[in-house]
Structures are given as structure tokens and as C-alpha cells.
Amino acid sequence: MEVLRNFAGAIFGSIMGMGAAGIVKMLVMWIIGGVLIYLAVKKEMEPNLMLPMGFGAILVNLPSSGAVTQIIGGVIEEGPLSVLFDAGIANELFPLLLFIGIGAMIDFGPLLKNPKLLLFGAAAQFGIFITILLAAVVGHFFPGTFSIQDAASIGVIGAADGPTAIFVANYYNTKYMGAILVAAYSYMALVPIIQPPCIRLVTTKKERLMRMPYETGEVKKSLRILFPIMVTVVAGIIAPRSVGLVGFLMFGNLIRECGVLNSLSETAQNALANLITIFLGITVAVKMQADQFLAWQTLLIMGLGLFAFVFDTIGGVLFAKFLNLFAKNKVNPMIGACGISAFPMSSRVVHKMGLQEDMHNFLLMHAAGVNVGGQIASVIAGGLILNLVAK
Image 1 (tube, rainbow, N blue to C red):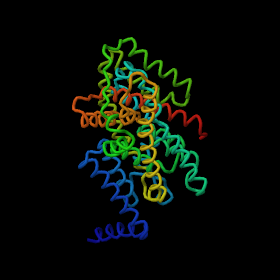
Image 2: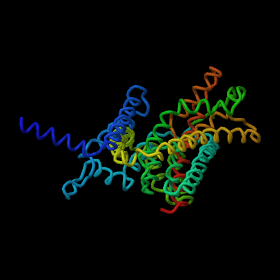
Image 3: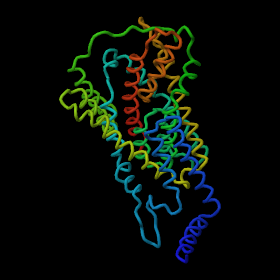
């Protein structure tokens, strides 16, 4: 009994040592973690990442959590999540390895049949740079909030590309990484909710009814193999800092398309991608400790991220409408919204919207072409940011 009393007293003392404010923050983070787990399980919102992030948020916010590195009695005790963070995120390893898996999943065929679709992917990245400017303005008028490096990290939320957001945020060592990643993956999961009203806002029913003919014929295998190589070379010349991101993405695609590494392609798409996703999701929770995460800046980041996401969606649609003013073969403006990197969710959303307007209007292949173009464009945009904004 004496042992139990001592044990209970130690636990009670540990909790009370946090103070009232610390206890409240801990409980709030437990609630946030619980909400993320609920959204993952009940609503199936990016469950591969939301569930590990939610559980990790609870894990790192337990009293004197042994999951993260801490100093006890003047001695540094390393926590496993902190070790994983240093080994896989602090050096950008996990995001890069994940890009191999993503590249192996992507079929660039629809894009290669109609290369102009890549333009929509580029146009849909404007929201990133507008958001960077807005965040920088906030940092100017409210000193101590966002540095230009923080602003650059926040802007990448608009790409709807979690690995790129992690890569850029970690490169600049922003203290807002937790908030940025929660925003990035939350909005990726909310694509079916956010994009439809944005698209309807800037399109007419006549425009949404527009049909697009399919490009017939198969893409030559030689072109499929040369494409990832040429993209890597061109991206490396335009934005050298993007070579790591683009190179790993294109390497994964080359494994897929070469035709002689089927087992490696399947491993990259399944075992590698799933394993890295598990480690990535729970490890980023290191940046979700209450003292860092619970700040008014977090709400502001969520708002700026939503602005970037909406602006990218609307910007892609408006760009498609602009091209229609001069193009002989018109495109359905809705496919412009797929220029974000949320692949393949965005293309499915646009395809579904097309069917709702006209049950014989099949936009999936066109939308998928824009979507994979957005994947390339978002990675290059991330590299451009690294080139433009000093560390």
C-alpha cells in the first residue's frame, strides 16, 4: 500500500507541477488529438495520416511524456519520437522517401496525351505566393508573429501537398510546423467539401455542362520513360532546390514505367509508402506539443491555409476560363480546380460534379491529367520558394 501511495503521489505531483494553465493546455491537446482520430475513423478523412497525428498529439502531451526528449534531474533522456523526428524529418528523409511511393502511384498518361493540361497545374499554384505575401504582411504589422520563412512555410499549405509542406516547413525550421501540417492534411481531406462551392461560385451551368473529347491512342513506352527524366532535368535547371523533391517523385514514376521493376514498383506503392506514412504521421506530432501548438497564430495559419486552398482552386478555374477566350477547343473550366496536388481526390470531385450536371459528361481522365500536372507544379513551386526565400 505504501508503494501505491508513493506512486499515486508521484503522478499527482507530476500533474500538479504543470500548473492550472498547463493542465488545461494538456486537456485541450488531448481533445484535438481525439478529434483528429474521430475524423480519421468516423469520417475517413485522410485516415493514414490523421489517425497517427491524432494519437501522436495525445502521446507527446502526456505529463513528462517519455515519447519526446526531456531533461530529468539534469540528465537528457531521449524520447523515441524525437529520435525519429531527427532521423527522418529534420533531414527531410521521410518526405523524400514518401515521394518515391507517390511517384510510383502516378500515371502521367492523361497528361502526356494532352500536355497543355500542365498549364492548369502551374496556374493553380498562384494561391501559394499570394498567401506568402499575406502572411509576410501579418508578420510586418505584428512583429514576433511570422517571419518571411514562416510565411513561406504557411503558403505551401495551398499546394495541398503534405510531403512538400513538411519539406519546406522543416527546411526553414519554423516553430509552426505542427499547425501547418494539421492545416495541410485537414484541407486535403476536405477537398470534397471545399472545392464544389468554390467551383460553382465562378462557373455557370453552361460551362459545367461542357464536354471534352478524349485523346485516343496509347502513350509510347519510350515517352513514359523519358518524361520523368526530362522533368527532373528541367526542374533542376529552373529551381535547383526542387531537385530533391522532383527527383524522388520522378524516380518513383520511372520505376513504375520502366517495365522491368514491377516488384520494386509494387513495394514503393504499398509497403514503402505505408511504412513511411505511419512514421511520418506519428513523428510530426513532436511539433504538436501544447506550448508550441496552442497559440492564436495557429488559428491564423488555419485561416491563411484555407485562403490559399480556395484561391488555388478558384485561380485554376479562372485560368481555364481565360484560355477558353482564345482556344479553339474549349475545356470545361472545372478541370482547372484539379491543379492542386490533392491527387486523386480533386479529379474525382470534378468528375462527380460533371456527372451531376450531365450523366454522360465524363471528365475523369482530363481532370486526372490536370491533377498529376498539379503534383509536379506544386513540387516545383516548393523548390522555387526555397530558392527565393533565404533560410
